[in-house]
Image (cartoon, rainbow, N blue to C red; front, side):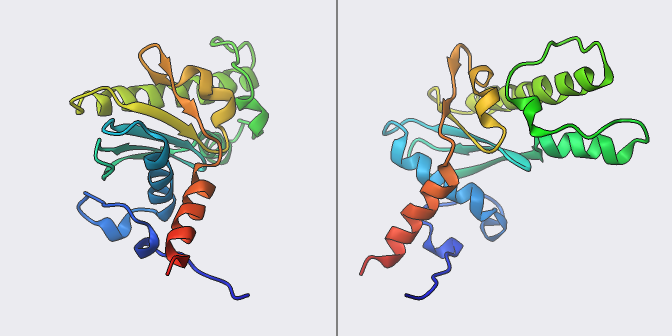
Amino acid sequence: SRLETLTRGDIAIEVDVKEPARVGIDRLLTALAVNCVRPSQRPAIVVDMGTAMTVNLISEDGVFQGGAILAGPMTALGALHTATSSLPMLGPEVFESPPPAVGKSTNEAMASGAYWGAIGAARQLIERMAATCTQSPEVYLTGGAARGLAAHVGLGDRPARHLPQLVLSGIRLAADGKLQP
């Protein structure tokens, strides 16, 4: 068996942005996977809580519309540790359950900022993107920090649907399409 390499050309999704070739393949793979699970003719917003946090809009007809890219929650914590002389490096356990909003120690304050800040950023971007849609989008959440944040990310009172392996699902779909005769 030989190794196969996937490229953007193997991802069967239309991309409506200024520079389609510059869109990260991970963003396109999550969009491809979401197109298989979102209700027909409903737009979708995909939040990926990884090293970078991406929030992307997929139109009701399945076209990748672009979105927002910001530092993921662990990246933000790492930047605080690196850029300051006194702030510690916290681990991913910070995102396993909601910390108190009011931290009573440096570690608790950093955990609060990272956890609730990521949720606030995601919710604000979701709301603003949803406002551009003619109908309410479905919201999907994936990525390494997603599990512990899932209950607090969504649109209005509807939580996001947590699908932890969207990138891997997108790889499978793209590979299956590439291997078909």
